[in-house]
Image (cartoon, rainbow, N blue to C red; front, side, top):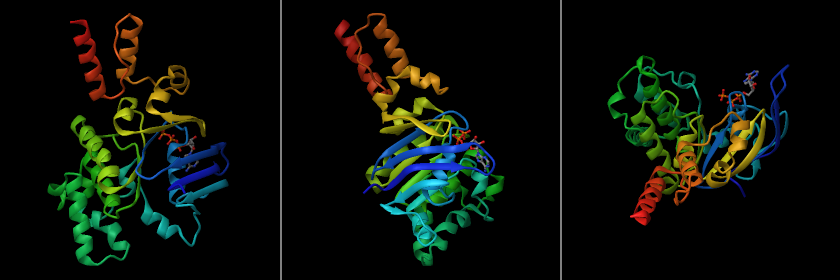
Length: 277
Ligand SMILES: Nc1ncnc2c1ncn2[C@@H]1O[C@H](COP(=O)(O)OP(=O)(O)OP(=O)(O)O)[C@@H](O)[C@H]1O
């Protein structure tokens, strides 16, 4: 049984061309999945089906093997938490602390459990010092962290992040990467995210879906997808800088192993240097 699955999912917004067409998507437990593709590819539309915000025009969405229905949508939303692209869409309480408490309170949890969850989420996102602030006066990156904390406080098993790094400063991006990478191991969570920053994908994902014009045009491991520059160019994406640089060195005759993450690249460069010495 897959945690989240779509079968032949099609979605047509009223009066428009299909935003999704025959999408088959699978998320397994504890996986880190990147969904990449150009503007308008259908990434956000796909995500909104994972917890019943949108209903399929045709096809199916299954969560823990069960189709999402009117009857189980509340349970599904406890299980799959989505952080939208624009944090203003999900921040509305007078203080950050109240905002982060909103979700768990709505789940009917007692006050002590809510307080515990709020503390945990503020701590994980490193925003304890923002707790008394008015959310609407925060910077874009701060709001983004508050929005993520609000969803995290509901302790979903699947965390869906639509463009999580948009609006974050460089340290914010590094913090987010560290945080996302801990979730599967430390909390058994599955993370699904979209991004336009291909350089981050290898650092944050084990598996990639490439979308274009409402369809999944490729899927595979980081190695499989980034070995296909023509596919990435066709979908207005670029090969990340690390494999691009290593490939060009290999083509110039340098004996260096391919790598995708910063850490592996460092090792490849050191090995190549040592071999040469
Ligand atoms: N509420 C809506 N009503 C009508 N059309 C919509 C609506 N939301 C999205 N669309 C259309 O559906 C298509 C897919 O949009 P979607 O937001 O899912 O793409 P995306 O891959 O998330 O894009 P981006 O990278 O720009 O965030 C686009 O053509 C968009 O114009």
